[in-house]
Length: 470
Image (cartoon, rainbow, N blue to C red; front, side, top):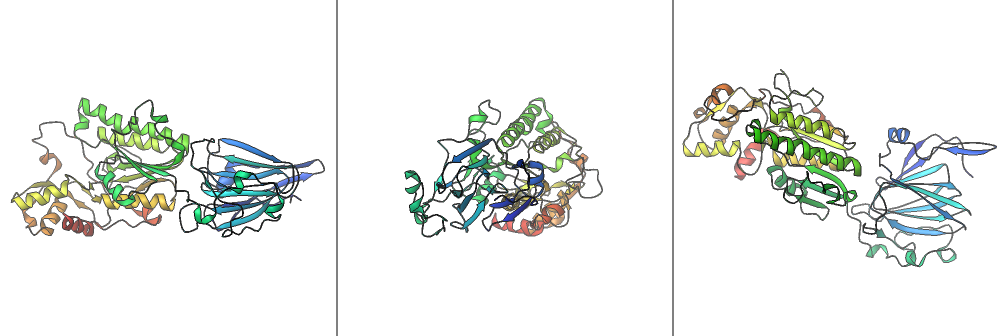
């Protein structure tokens, strides 16, 4: 019999992401009423905002009708409209909880959230049971499914009615035992800008797992009208946008301005639409150039943007677009150093060649090494940190470009006094082409990323390791 008057309450099950819910049901002599799915109340209590697109009902005439065990590549919200079931759920995802089992009776006063890859099955305990479920993807014959035999000895589900005495389809009877089940892999992760310095660091950090894909601009054109059908986007859990136009001075030219807005805004807008439509987490890498650098303290994630040049304007516009995506991480960084030509390698080469450089000393910030940036992005995704903006740079004392140059000279066995500090205006006085305005203060506050459980690498330590590696 349905229990009336229970408070709305989630109950953890021991299988990650599988959550049983008690539902308030209001009844009188006319019958009963419940809110079977109420987004605002349920998400406030921790339910994933999973974006259902379809509502299905399976009506079962007889007691003992048994279905499953099916793991699908989408999330489900399961309840019953009438009747009662015994439900059994088995984790069929890759990972340490593969094979874990949870069982419970479900009547109209209960529901359960079943995450992607958890096998779902049930047995009816009353006649005329209407089993109802919301899903966040449309059924597709090309989707990847995983199955487990209802009678598997390892799962050892204690069915209320013996399987020999119930109605089961021939297909369900033919599903494999647990030892023969191919676990469902995680939802796909797509890394864009795979050949860039951050893209290469992400490849080193995330590896070549089957569910991680890498794409260059030539392989996936984000401004193409066919982008919506370029992938089966519902198979993706995350997109990491490591692609960007970063030629800050060239962006001040007519051609560069067009290219910067195309890559940093139009392409980002297309990604934001895809991510929003398909419930994908979008990771977007931003820049200290969204600020004008006039603050006398480190910039926080909540400071208003005030970009000086075209590059900073396009990055700020991209940030605003990504912020509209329900599941997003805007990772704001500065002074990025990775593979390929960069400031640190240039200074090391000058030191070795006996050149005494003049280096800007009125811009202050922190270096960010791409391996640390990739590590932080992975941390946000794997820990499901709260969505939003995160500053992520190297840790330690801020320094000017001239200070960093002297540190490179010193760590490579050369006299740091060979580096002469000059102002930004002096440095660019003889420039032959357009020069983008630079923020003088590029220091970003790191409290939020630390609160999310990630400790950025110390800049000095990372610089030493980078030079030793080279």
